[in-house]
Image (cartoon, rainbow, N blue to C red; front, side, top):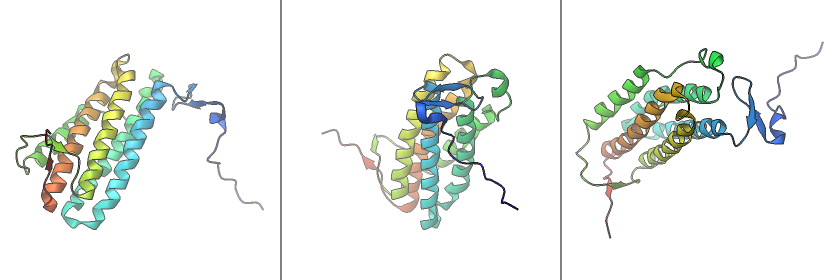
Amino acid sequence: MTAPQKAKIYTRTGDNGSTRLVDGSCVEKFNPRVEAYGTVDELNSYLGLIRSTLTTDQRIANLDPVLEKIQNELFNIGSLLATEKDDFFQMLPPITEAHVQFLENQIDLTSAELPELRNFILPSGHPTASHLHVARTFCRRSERRSAEIAVKDSRYQLTMQYLNRLSDYLFVAARWVNHTTGVKDVLWKKT
């Protein structure tokens, strides 16, 4: 008796510069959809790295469930961006107003604990805060790449709102980490 064969991770379909979307469509690897969901994947992976830093400081560990929820929602966004055909799109987990509202609530709750910000700050501070600032820039890039799809397809309106609020949340979370760990935000000096 032979062991059952596992599916191989490689498909060789990308060897010629093309790839398949979630809905089975074949596109070039430089297609705006591939760029959009690829940048969302980068952001999602980076949030995983950030989550691994939270175990080193219990003062900031309560960010973990929020970031895990966000990672799951980013996975949904990636699948939506990787889908062109409407019938398939309708079968995927959507991004809803409730998802956007969750981020707005997190921004409000987190901001309430912070001193008022009257100046621009440099992306720095506690290592986790610095990572959150990098994630914010990844999120902004995801937003820009996704906008290339959204300007032509209204199905992505809530995706755009979500990514916009997420970058705001990541900024506030970075400030919160600095505040909670006793690290001062570094003000921008206009020299």
